[in-house]
Length: 307
Image 1 (cartoon, helix red, strand yellow):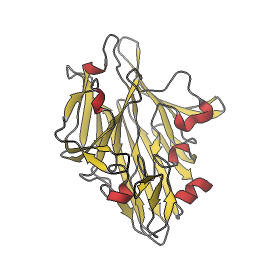
Image 2: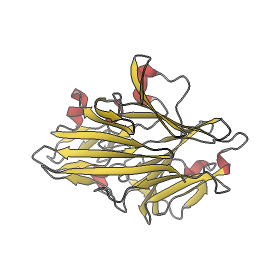
Image 3: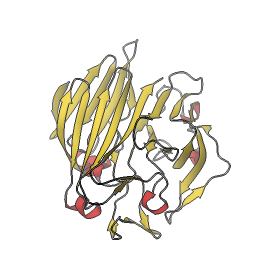
Image 4: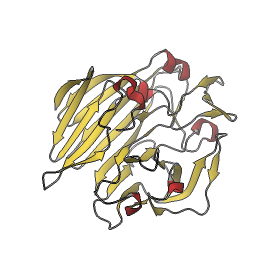
């Protein structure tokens, strides 16, 4: 592991086998890039990071893996976006995807396999989530895969709700001459939703569990009620698949775990495949919403691997 000073940021890089991982643990506990050196000497970016990002607005960079905590997606209270009702009955503000991606973290530890970082809430975070807790992010890197764990420890006197997740920006397409329609995904879901403008979940029926990324209607869909913990995607020929697993030994594993797929535009160099604890707006509909009792802790774990 090496430390790099770049654009006023302290970055860390791990080289493990053919894989190189670049992260900024102090800024949102952000994994920025995963690249892979191929047998012919070329380099493939598995997780996308733009060549010239706006480091002054690091939280909004379209790349890497922004951490979504305490809630994923847009939060609503009775149809009004930007708020949620806490366990004490008070309605509080909540930005889209929560506040962790723009928060400062403190490095707890680093080693040759990864890092652990702890969230340090600012005034805005305390206004949105005014509880006594500890939230940590732990990455474990390997040659062709990595695991990441979120851990919420409750030091408060009341149960704490959360429904966190990841926002992985995968490079797609990753072969010259191919387009999005040449890549397909397989998600073992029994239900599929879109998030309506009033915060409700609109059921899509019927829907395709296997489809390609070239269909514009697939973007921003929420796949849940999972039959299995593995989603995979890759070229239509079935080679070079990427798999994302919900780790079954985590406290938050359930059928309401969700995979969300999204991209910004037709020509974006990425497509996001996002494992979430549950569908967005969990405090309202409570599907995939988890609580941590006072004095206890809970963990959410996923693995991303080249299959």
